[in-house]
Structures are given as C-alpha cells and as structure tokens.
Amino acid sequence: VQLVETGGGLVQAGGSRRLSCVVSGGTVSGFVMGWFRQAPGKEREFLALISTLGNMIYADSVKGRFTISRDDAKNTVYLQMKMLKLEDTAVYYCAAGSRFTSAATDYKNWGQGTQVTVSS
Picture 1 (cartoon, rainbow, N blue to C red):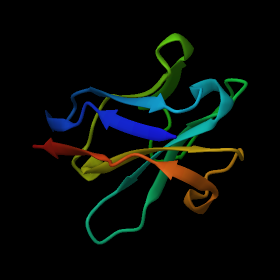
Picture 2 (cartoon, helix red, strand yellow; picture 1 turned 90 degrees about the horizontal axis):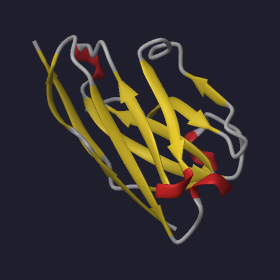
Picture 3 (cartoon, rainbow, N blue to C red; picture 1 turned 180 degrees about the vertical axis):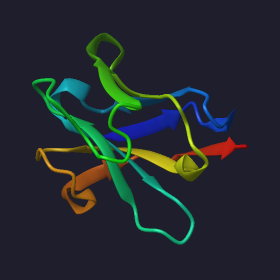
C-alpha cells in the first residue's frame, strides 16, 4: 500500500487548505485512514481519522476547524483545514491502518508527508 499526500504549502493565518492523500495498492474504504502532523522538535500528533464505515473522530486541537472525508471513487482521503493558526505549521501525514485508534504506532502504512506553513 502506498500513500501520497499533496496540497501542502504556505497559507496565511485564518486561511484554509485542503490536503489530499491518494491510496494505491489497496482500497481506501478498507482501511482506517488517519491524519497526523509533526512540528519540529515535537512528537507526531493525531489529528483525525475515518473508519471503514465512515465514522470520524478528531483531536480536540482541531475539532471544529478540520474535517476529514473520503472519496471512494478516487481512492482518496482529504483533510479540509480552516481557520489555520501559526501553531498548525507542521509536516502533515496520512496513514492507513486496521484499528480504530489515534495511536500512530498502530498505523502500518504512511505517506511521505506534506509541509503546511502558516504565516502571520
């Protein structure tokens, strides 16, 4: 299974950005798909996940601002981000796993990451 994230870049604080993660070698609806991020000097942080049945959970830090969704026809999972803050600057990763969990160690397949930089 390969995951490729796109959509990162420079965005002003208060702005929006949508990240995409295309899955190949497997069916996106057959995985629990998660989004994580990692800022310099910090641990990888869980953001959101969507289960095979479409159930979603979010970290408190992004609840109400970020939305995870899935397009089965495109084998893609998205992370729509709005009201971005300076502290949202990080490398964003998507991951595929088989357990409904926010623990990064439970996800076996990871993308290469995409940088999101929020400027003032």
